[in-house]
Image 1 (cartoon, one colour):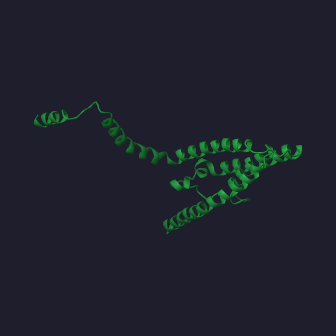
Image 2 (cartoon, rainbow, N blue to C red):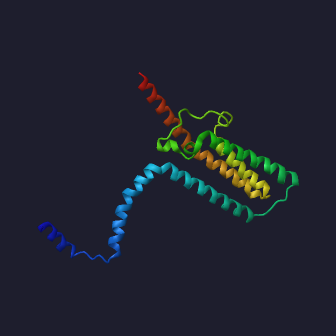
Image 3 (cartoon, helix red, strand yellow):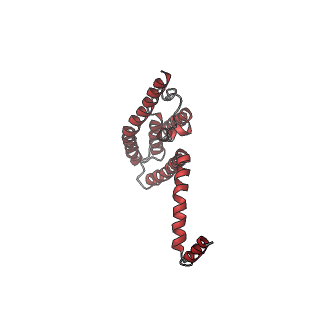
Length: 189
């Protein structure tokens, strides 16, 4: 009873009307809740973030194209060639996604989610980085479709950005699968 009485006396010194108290309690609750939810759903959350950011990137790219000078192309280049390049790019992106799956596409290896074997079927048996090549082709196709020379410069920048990204991604992916293979071999003995 005295413990309860001490608590009641102590509680009388608490101002329950202050929003700062509830903000502190909410942030204290949110931290472990957030890291547990993110830890369990990190790859999915990252995948959704990457996908939404990609859509936003497309909107910004289209706006940037329309804000620049147009250079009229012959009808065949503007339509047929643009569609072929854009279609080939989307085909590579789509078939890469099918081969890798959601987690393979959205950096599942960073979360310890690995495929049984490293993906080597089409389109990975034709190109090392078909998703990046396909994405770059989509930028080129859009530049031709909208007849904006700046789009070709942006496409070169896209290729460079992917080149830099691969300097980080390839070694990491190689390391993860090498470690896994080494671990699997040691378990067999």
